[in-house]
Amino acid sequence: MQHASLPISISQITKRYGKTYALDHVDLEIHSGEFLTLLGPSGSGKTTLLTVLAGFTRPDGGSLKFGDTEMVCEPPHKRDVGMVFQNYALFPHMSVLDNVGFPLKLRGVKPGERTQRAERALEMVRLGGYGSRDVEQLSGGQRQRVALARAMVFEPHIMLMDEPLSALDKQLREHMQIELRQLHDKLGMTTVYVTHDQREALTMSDRIAVIHAGRIMQLDTPRALYERPVNRFVAEFIGESTFLPVQVAAGKATLAGQAIQTASPPLHDGPQMLMLRPERLRMLGTDAVAAPSANVFDATVTAIVYQGDSSLFQLALGDGSVVGVRDTSVMRVAAGDRVRLQVDVQDTVLLPAESAG
Ligand code: ADP
Ligand code: MG
Image (cartoon, rainbow, N blue to C red; front, top):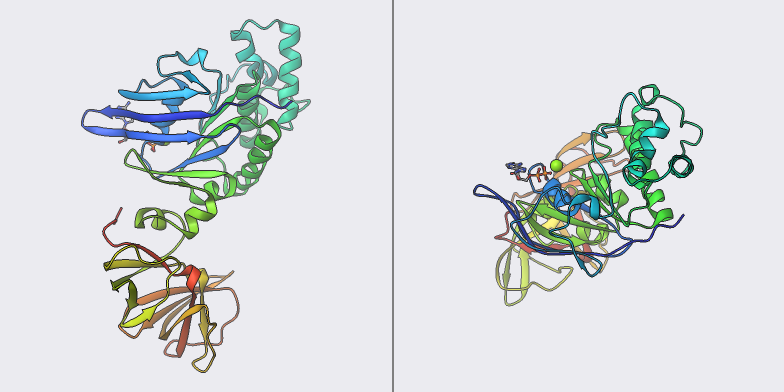
């Protein structure tokens, strides 16, 4: 069963609680059938935006369309959205089948058809044959799948999920991330997913909207967000990084007194910030020949931290600034050794100096 799906158009949506802007003039276009994630720290406005979509929160201003239809004033039951929350709120004294069939009962679907459709939804989440069980007999992961089956049993055009996996342990969470994404690909409904976990967002999403203080900082594919963050907040929220001050004069960037080539030309003269991802850096011997498309700096190893699957090396550049390098190979270097640090030009990314987030 391929569900129909609808695009979502969010324009200038604002929600205030007292003086706090939970949502501050949010614009967001979500494509039909897309898996879009709202990623941000606690209190950034993720849940508020999701409840605006569901109709539980009335915004102070702005427009919300599903397809061409204005939805801001529509009550939740007229919105045709399925929802899954962190605490999945199943009815404890009902069977799995009755839980899943409940939304159909609310919509006046007759018992025979109800059972049939609930069983089909359970098969979708790989719980075929579990219908007669009590929900209390199920594991955490199975309960979350029942909640999912209940959210999709009436074949909504839009699916909303608010940190649905955060109560599960790491292994199950990672398994469910893949399963949820596969289910989305099979059913094709427009999905808005909320998480504060950057790895989860990178794993699951077509695009990610990074949200901070009620505003969308950047909307991009996982790769673009990671490799080309627009400011320091996004760069710090996703992945590890070192930030170094850079001077730009006459369009040329210099770091620690040395000219550097950058992934894209500097936007303006003046102070800017260089972002370096530790796993994109390479250490070379002092006599090694650097690649032509790379920046190379003389450095001294100041610390080595063994972390099992990789090691983290701390390097000091000529001007004393410290850079982290992650390496998975076994390096024959020791603290105090002199090395050369190599960064591909495409990984030499400038950010605006003033955007401290
Ligand atoms: P997130 O889901 O990203 O953690 P929320 O959307 O829950 O963030 O909250 C965004 C901001 O709005 C926070 O500052 C929060 O305290 C505030 N807020 C959310 N709901 C209410 C409410 N019902 N009353 C007052 N303030 C609220
Ligand atoms: Mg929340």
